[in-house]
Length: 317
Length: 271
Image (cartoon, rainbow over all chains, first blue to last red; front, side, top):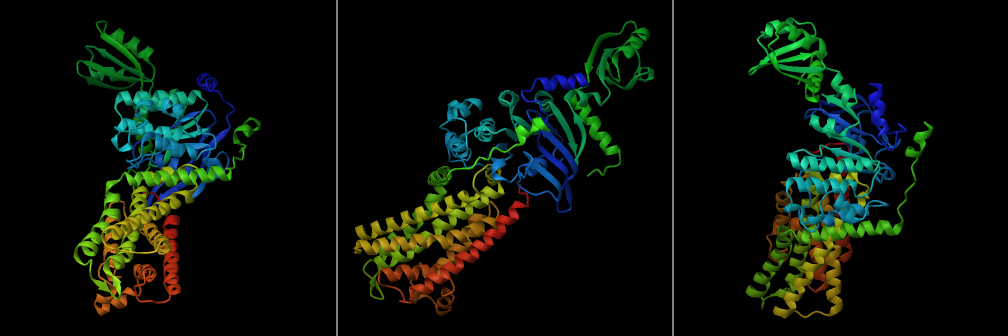
């Protein structure tokens, strides 16, 4: 685990561990609704951190607090060690938020030109267009863009000031697989340029693909935090699939099996570790076939974590 | 924490004055382009006052006289006021309400944009379109209504009406902070049209019912239209200072209301 941690850190251009953005004991309420409860959370220089959680978990609230768009009810939001509303700090940050409507009669290059002008050292227009894959759309009006093109334009507005810190709130929501992968590539290029990124997503795959560190958030609380590998390790480790004459009930008898269920012609088994279970399975059914062993995906980890969170006495709904 | 000092130390990036000026200019330029390409805005803001003027000032009553002033001249002042109101209210309120309600203003607020640049751009837009409407009315009146006016008087009329855009821009900002993104245009019309009628912008003041004439004295468009009428030698010849004072007081009240909305937004989430 420690080795994995070191490995991810060594890939980063900056590994000083300096805290660039943090929430310290932050709670935020909207009237009766508690959007965040006593959240502690940090983003360190050069890292990509994903806030992962279902809709309404408090991800966007966390981002808005760090952008200084509203104050927390208690606790402190800090960016670059100071107040997020400080214009000096805003000049070093870029944000991609979920927007209902963007002025539709302005062209892509006009939007970028305006946002670039806010920053002290913006990237040249051509570079921004290239980074966001918008070269061919530069003269297109925002209202004439497709969903994916709109997201790319909002991404361009976030990066055009060449900021040190990027906030990406659900950057690929509503995009098809191809557009999502293209945006991931663009985000990775920003990582290579040494940016620190806070990303929110409810796509588990997205957090796994992009982040050095994942914080799982549910009902306003961070319920798990670590590298993608660590998060996965927090649940039962392996998934075994095989076609066997053994009944599900008898498979469940095998030591180390956490769960087993029939899935079409095969049996799917959750196990803490695969080796001993597979040995036992083969001993009991030499005719066993179609054996597959998979690491538990983030999906399983996530479901297990949020389920436990509910079991531990937290109010559901 | 020694290594983190480099990342955390803030390299005091202060904007030069010329950079700040550039931001204000770009903000205003793109606000103008955005609305110029928005047919709803240009159509309602420019076409309506011009259509009314052509119909009631040039086609129907061109030879009539109101209190010693020819109708084509008189109506430039009142439809000019009407046009200024429309350009200013629609120029500020509907855009602000939509930007606020649908999240775009949060993107702008999260950026290092100087917040004042956003409002200045909307006011500049309102004043620009006000100048365009009044100038077009003058062109129509001179070309087809036999209006004759010394250059100095024309400049004074345009200047006064464009300055008169400020109270209504302030009013628009206040409406924009308290109306929803979809209800803002309806809210504007609900205020704008009765206010125009009661202030004598469609039917000259002296032809209004007595009760309406009394109400008019409390309405800002009445005071702006009287200032404009005074310049072309019409109207009720009340002291100009009183009109300016009413408009100033109204502007300050609206800015106060807008400020409450602005501060409320800093602590509240929309959409």
